Length: 423
Image (cartoon, rainbow, N blue to C red; front, side):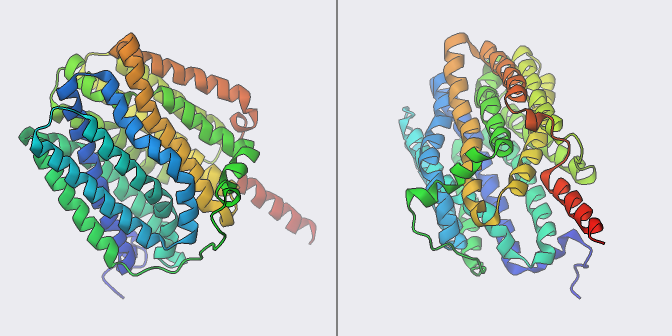
């Protein structure tokens, strides 16, 4: 046997395809997270405009919204390895364009938004393919280990990326974009070097009927619709992370290094929560846990907008990340258990639309609201609106609020009862 024991969670790394894929994902995530810190600080330093901070999110979301449903169909129809490789190559181009923009010394920000439109387009196609390819990378008996290692590694990259971006920004955005582009180059090469894993492809033509199949399924399932729409509207109003450059600069009076730590905090909170969930998974009162996670996110946002202390802001963002992780955990399991495998890619695409809308569109909403009512008032308003949405959704989707166990558990109990009744 190799140096990896069969019981070791790292034993899955003996599969070359998975190892290359995992390395590519980690490096690509690091690069994007570093760039996000640099873009936010650079744009706000040039403009001091809260509206332009919101435009960063809108520029990424608009193409994402237009392309994500066809992208889900593409992930079911075409080679996912090739899709991911091309998307990483486009992200490399984005990094190079940001570097070129900085070197030219331009003092207008519209080229940044144009580049982010390209990034949003690549992300739209990369998301469904990334979600769907992992099961093809390893044998079935190693899949759970691959999921665990991939998820934990992603959180590590989300934690380290903003911190590295903030520290490197000491020497200017040029260094951040240069290193980010280098990481994306390596990630693209690694993904290209993986062998195309076997996958079942759906040869159904890309008609509106087939593309919208996932959306029709979601609309027909109150549990799925309620779970993912809760995230959409709650985080839509609570998108305070877009305003972190302004909060860091104008309220907390810290530099890009402090901003990097603030951007790290939600990922750290999510990672710590995911570790806790791995040891103590949620099995009872799943509906209340999901609503409670969203409520914690809202409370953290309210306090974030009310404080002028860095430590309190950092703790709030930690709690927001933990609350969001609980909501994501429950929602992900509900969607997976309720969705037939034949349309999983397209339902994942619909889920990505809701997540993307809540994040990037929420950032735009926060920028517009902050420009209208002021920075701190906008953050507090967003958190309060999240709490209102939480209460409203508990009324609109009582089946979700009262759900005790995940659907698969009830099915297992029914099967066991049927089996015992036939004996």
